[in-house]
Length: 490
Ligand code: HEM
Image (tube, rainbow, N blue to C red):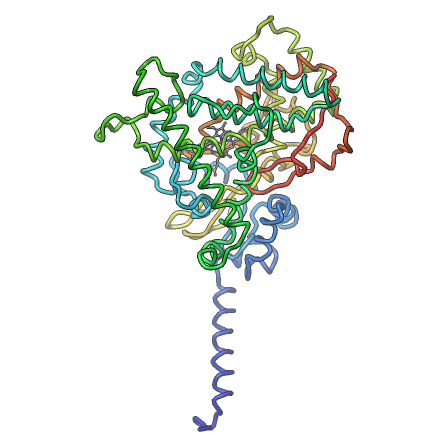
């Protein structure tokens, strides 16, 4: 082997590797995130973050880092989490300078909807067209549908109670929420409340957020699946295709009805936007509407289900809170409607407190820092890095919510500015949940109907049900790890 300047080839190779390694170490140590507090390993690798995501522990882990390192914490070489209400307002602002990160596109690949698009103009157009039907006044027309589905769910619970000795409120809440959003989007529901059975559709709904989270966490695996089948990820793709199938068939059916019956066809959240001609800017093409409908179904089922489930379970464990709510509900007229419920402050506080402690989307909603960077909670973060303020942590900040782990609806009697600013169960700014008024209507009606019908409800211990079943599994969405909640609705 020929020597070069007295050095063997092996030695040269070692020097090259050493120089490359030093270069790498220098790059990492001089990263702008090196100055951000956080465990040393988060400067070097995303591995721990990814592990926490796939094991459903990301929010708790990030929260433990906030408890140790403070308001601003580095959670990966490219990502920072912030537990501060002013930063919340900066990141999730209406002007929307902090755009949704590419995480969302990978979350639902091959789909571009109001939920997952990162394209500002596409989003603005869809949001403008979809918003009026989802506003409080727009929803007035859909109130009777929601009321009917809620009543059916309560009847289903009573029936199950008779037969089984307990009712699984998680199951009924899912049937209610899926039938509500199905009927409001397509003019016909998936008839879960009638068939009273799990089907492929509800199983898909339960898995879609998990599979999406997995894809976004391991984007490179998506590339591998083209060559090597990875069951979890290909299941996710199959679910996406099935969801597209449901949406396409259901929407096409209703489209046809509208063509045939015109104004007489059942009005839905989307029917005003059916496109008759290509140049009509106040409507949307079929494919785009279909993908928005998929977003409605995926975003509007599990979220409402889990919020309602935790609300009922918590009140069954807290007789003092339940008694106060019952006293308020006793003032309602017979045959009350949602309009009566909107006037009840304690009901509203119970819902707020559930959304605070059991946020259905507890994880960071990742946003990209705009060009030029931003100073968040006193720390400068350059453009291009990812930031988020996760609901799980901002809702547990003791400086904002004293005794944060206590379920205390009365804290909402006179909320401080900081409490309002830190409250993000529905996200914030231009990407705030478009379904929040619908969700609140469902929660008000279902809570009031449940507790007026079953005032003595308690947590059941049938079939070995314990608090352990309700320990939250926290993927992109959160819900009871056993996906059941047995209540003795006597
Ligand atoms: C308690 C129930 C609900 C909770 C906690 C909830 C939570 C959220 C959150 C946190 C976001 C922001 C996501 C982000 O920035 O990444 C969001 C967005 C969204 N939600 Fe909800 N949601 C609920 C119910 C619903 C319902 C019933 C619908 C039905 C239409 C819905 C449809 C959507 C859509 C389409 C978006 C995307 C909005 C946009 O980007 O403009 N959600 N939701």
